[in-house]
Amino acid sequence: MPKGGRKGGHKGRMRTYTSPEEIDAQMKAEKERKKDEEEGAAVNDEPVEEKPTESASDDSDDEDTQKRKGVEGLIDIENPNRVVQKSKKVADIVLEGPKELSRREREEIEKQKAKERYMKMHLAGKTEQAKADLARLAIIRKQREEAARKKEEERKAKESVAAAAAAAKGLHTMSLK
Image (cartoon, rainbow, N blue to C red; front, side, top):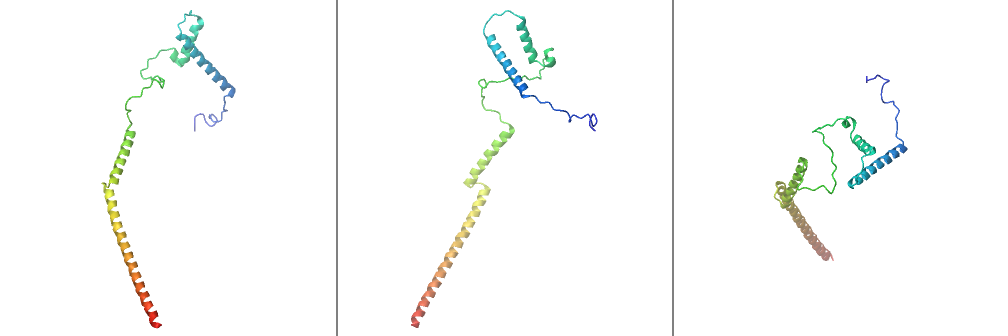
């Protein structure tokens, strides 16, 4: 029996959905935050002297707390295993020389090349299978030639018999008259 018995299950809970108005409000807040960050970056690029005020220090603190989650804001951790995702721009990416192929890709390319080589050899008649096919074709051609020759001889024999019968018939008809 699962934890909590029969009545303590999680499946009967009522579901809560976010309303479209709340989603729109969140999207607008996100856009405004991004716009503020971009404007702040543009302002920071220009050399302008400002007096340190409480609002400026509060903004920087807010940004730090927004970037760091949980305990990270309180403790600086140097984790050598943590990999920070760096976004690359398309313009910055330099296409390097030949890309290393994976084992599967290499095997697939080798298989295709081997198949092409075999087909060239097969068409040239140098493979075992091609030689066997050509020998079979030669035997079939000889058989067909012999069959055609026999048919021709039988046809000529029938014609000669028919001509002889017609000649004999023609003589018979003349002798009767």
